[in-house]
Image 1 (cartoon, helix red, strand yellow):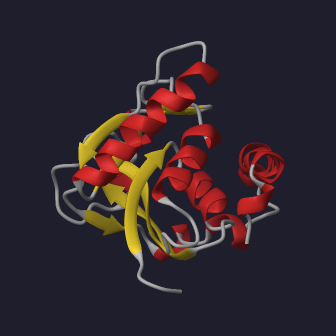
Image 2: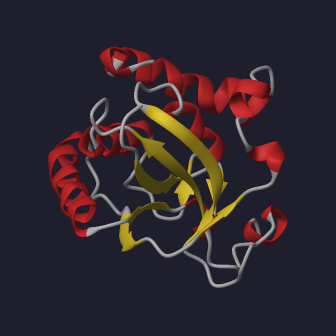
Length: 176
């Protein structure tokens, strides 16, 4: 891979977002973790209370010569419901909010463009937050690569499998 860029975003449970994004061409690394909160290095059990201010996010390194930030954000915005505030499916709370944490003004502008492009897909307004990136904290090891290590788990079969099937249908040309 060539010169890698960094993207940080969350759309509900980080297991779901990680499972979708790691199947794309041009992805270097992907880490599940927490961002946009007000305590340092929060443990998962505290983030789950919703009292730390953090969102479950993934931090991705990617090769923009293989997958553009525009394509990455478009896939992200169409692989979860960006119109529900602080919720994805059965996961409720501010830690499950839809958020893009941009690393520079170019990423901000591209995300704003993607919001406009995908809004017609949805009946309700997009509520995804767009904020400057500040800090990322890795989630515990058992959260990393969760889907690939737990495909037989009920959550993976009921929630994540349909997202991966949708990805294969909509973006087959972008899959690794």
